[in-house]
Image (cartoon, rainbow, N blue to C red; front, side, top):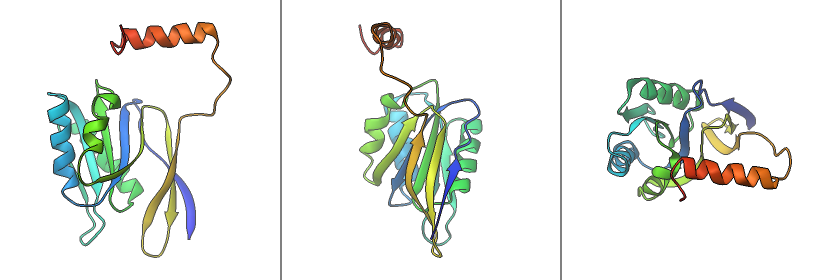
Length: 160
C-alpha cells in the first residue's frame, strides 16, 4: 500500500464539501438536497463511482463549478467519494441536508481552506484516509480576536 497526498484544486477559494457515500444515487440525491435547501444555489458536484464502469458522475447548476468538481474527483479517483463546490453560500447552509442524504456515509471536510487529501493506494484502488483542512494553529485568540469573530458572524447574518 502506498500513502500519498492530493491537493484539491480550488483556485478561487470556493467553499467545498468532500465526502463518502455508498451508491450511484448519490449524485441525484445531493442535487435535490442542494436545490431544496437553497433555491437558485450555484454548485457543481462530482462522484466517483466504485463499481464497473467506474465513471466520475456529475451534476450541478453552474458549468464552471461542475468542471472543477469533475477535475478534482477524477484526480482523487477514490471509490464512492463525492466533492461539491459551491458559490455564494456556505457549507453551513446545506451541510445538514447533505448529511441527511441516505447514501452519505461520511463528511471529510466542509471548508474554503486549502485542502490536502491523504490517500491510500492499493492494488484494488484508492481510499481517503483523512484530510488536512487549512493550516496549523498560530496561537490562542485574544479579546480583540473574539470581538472580530463576533463581528464577522453578525456581518454574515448568523448572529444578531
